Image (tube, rainbow, N blue to C red; front, top):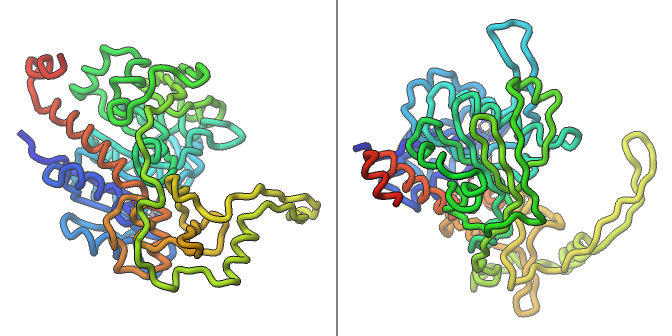
Amino acid sequence: MKQTINVVELFAGVGGFRLGLEKANKQLFKTVWANQWEPSKKVQHAFDCYTHNFKEGYASNEDITSVPDETFQNLNIDLLVGGFPCQDYSVARSLSKEEGIKGKKGVLFWDIKRVLENSHPKYVLLENVDRLLKSPSKQRGRDFAVMLATFRDLNYIVEWRVINAAEYGHAQRRRRVFIFAYKENLDFAKKQSVHSQDELIYEKGFFAQTFPVQREAYKNRRMSVTLPEDIVDISDNFSFEFHLAGRMEKGNVHTIHTIPQLQRAIPLGEILENEVDEKYYLTEAQIEKFAYLRGPKKIERTSADGHKYIFSEGGMSPVDDLALPGRTMLTSEASVNRSTHIVEIDGRKRFLTPVECERLNSFPDNWTANIPERMRYFTMGNALVVNLVKDMAKTIEKIESLEQVTDTQLELHLN
Ligand SMILES: C[S@@+](CC[C@H](N)C(=O)[O-])C[C@H]1O[C@@H](n2cnc3c(N)ncnc32)[C@H](O)[C@@H]1O
């Protein structure tokens, strides 16, 4: 019986996916190859942090688009993981027949596809901003449909779910879409196929097992559609409203606006450090600046083509509420920006410390301590809530154990 699930981690950042997998079961999940490269940066801080924390397996610090296909052909992988950018996934037919379909250059989803074509992992787990489901604004849902059709053509079944980490017991109100794909020929796929699409999304599927939802659709938002066969046709003409949860098998899509079964979140106040260096406290000038940034405003601006318009934004509370889980952390956390967290303790306002940012994402304290402080904030803004991955890894482990048993044992296990 196979003892490990071999993992490739793309767009690895400081290793949130790998950490989550290892928190679930370090013996089972073995990251054999990882890639992280920050475009046009001489010093590769995220990569340095990754290799400082993880010594096993091969870590590549190259532009993923320049890694040759053979590298992936030589990898024997079971699981591909990665958090990749939301870009333009439109495709066109190439002039030459051999080349087939062409996506835009520099769009990193095509490198995910390349890894799948060259190494055929059983499972894929990806993360993206939830906007991916609606992009681009002029042809809503096109990019996600192109992505689903790509998986369909490679014989994968796909489930997705938008998850707000705070709704499932974590310390940050971070909403991201997670995408889990698995090969159609797995025993797990066979077992799943006895359930209806509704049952799979509400109860039996990968995400329903990991992050339970209520058995009803919000405002009855439930839709089905069959993706056109031709991916160029999808790219040119297809538009659809993908809801928060869904499933695609052989091009048949079913999507539901699900309602989470809420778990108690960790409030921001609970993850703060007790003793904090003076440098994290705001000066008078900073207090004034942040009061302005977070306040309501109406400003006259001039657009690039010269016409004047009123930019307005509503006010937000002057400091973050310690009784609530933290707001989403962005890569701009270390800059003077209205989204930067400000907490008030004993009447004094201060920034979050790097350790507190790590805690918002359930990384261990000082995970990023070997890189400059500014980059500690930046990498945490890019990272994910590690314990969500840990939860999903446990479900993958369950699925994998089904793959390892005989059909009779499987019946017994499932009944
Ligand atoms: C959203 S972040 C992923 C963060 C990661 N999940 C973590 O826990 O830290 C995407 C990462 O992709 C990297 N990246 C961007 N373009 C890349 C490329 N062409 N090749 C390799 N990595 C790239 C970025 O530097 C960034 O660290």
